[in-house]
Image (tube, rainbow, N blue to C red; front, side, top):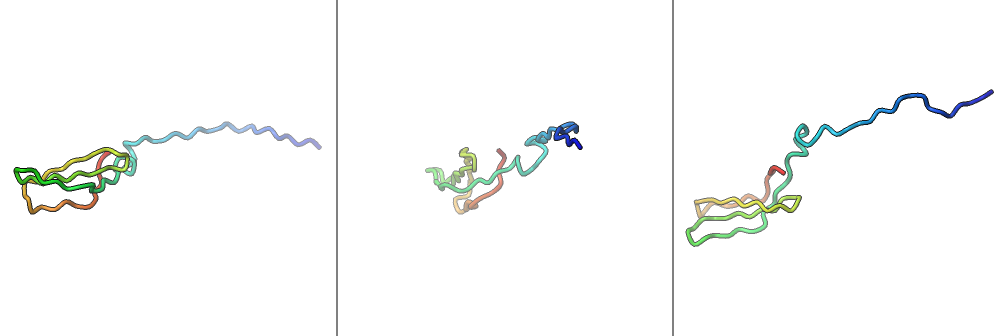
Length: 74
């Protein structure tokens, strides 16, 4: 009796669908780093993304608060 250990099936290679098709790969979490108020009364909300990118948003209303975190694009 002979037993062959060779595999005769073809191998299939799986590839990623890419970052544009999966919405989880397109968005990341941006967290509030600090809040600054200009001399003009403009509130500047400075955020840091998960990848380390700096995101700045401004609000004309001085009483407007900054949200703690939000989903931003990569």
